[in-house]
Amino acid sequence: MAKRGPAMRDNLREDHHEFLEIYHFTPSEFEKSGPAWPIRIGYNEAKANYHIGPRTTPYHYLLVILDGRGTFHQAGQTYSLRPGDLFCLFPQVTHEYYTAADEPLRKIFFAFDGPGARSLLARLGLQEEQPHAAGAAVKEAVKLLWTFLDRSARGAGQSGERMTDLARLHYLHGVFDLLTASTAGTRQSGLRGESAWLQRGKEYLEMHYADGITVERAADYVGVERTHFSKRFRHTYGLPPVQYLQELKMKEARHLLEHTGYTLSEIAHSVGYPDLFSFSKAFKKWTGQPPKTYRMERMAAGGQEAEQRGTNASGHE
Image 1 (cartoon, helix red, strand yellow):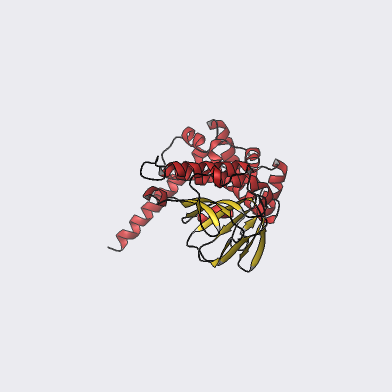
Image 2 (cartoon, helix red, strand yellow):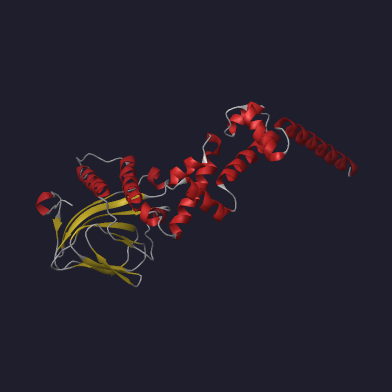
C-alpha cells in the first residue's frame, strides 16, 4: 500500500501520541431508516507511544491496518496486527490496542451504527468472539476508503462541498461489498460457510422460482457446481433442489387457482412456465388433476362449505 505521511495530508492534527485526521457525520432520517449508517471516518499515524484503552465505544468500528505492527486485546483474546489486517470494535465491549514502537501503526478507520451493523460485520466473518481478520483488507476496499476520506475532507468547514446522505451510504456499503467479496471464499470453506451458501441458494430459489430459473443458475449464483449443490441441498433439506423448485411453483399455482380469478394462462406465466401446455402437464403430474379440474372441484367444495355454514347459522336463530 502506498505510503502516506503527515506531509501528504492537509488536515492531520498532531497530539501527544498520534497524527489524526477525522470527520464526523450526523445521520439523516433517511440513513436511520436503513440497516446501518456511518458516524465518522478517520486516518491516523501512530507515534511510538500510541496506546488506546482499555476502554469501550458506543459504536461499531472497522479499522484497517495500512502499515506497521501492533497488538489488539478484546474479549480475553490477543491478536497481532499487521498490514492488511482488519479488526473491529463492538459497542460496550472493552478493548485495548497499541503500536509496536519500532514499527508505528498507520490505519484508516470508520465508525458506524444501526440495527444491521453486526450483520454487516458478520458478512466479513467478524463478531465479538472473532473481531480480527488477517490480511482481509483488499486494495480495492482500501482505495474506496481513501476516496471516502478525501470526499469527507472536501465537505469539511462552512465553505465545504457537503456530502449527501446517499453518498455516505454509497461509500459505507461499497466498502463492505468489496470486503465481503474478498472474504467469501474463505468463509465458505468450512461447515458454517457451506450452511451459508446453501441457505442463499434456497432463498434464491424461493425468490426467483417464477422467473424461469434452473437449479444450475442457483448453483452458479452461490458459486458451486450444480452436482455438488444438488447433493448438499438434498442432504440438508431432504429433497433435491429441482423437486423443491417444482414444489414452490405448484404451491403458488394452487393458491392462485383457489383464491383468484386469473386465467390458466396467466397463472402459468405467473409461476414461471412459458405456456399453458407445459404448466398443465406439470400440474397434472404433481397433483393428479389438470388445473382446470382442480379449480372447478375447489370452487364446488367451497360453495358447499358456504352453504353448510349458512344452514348452521339459520339453525341457531
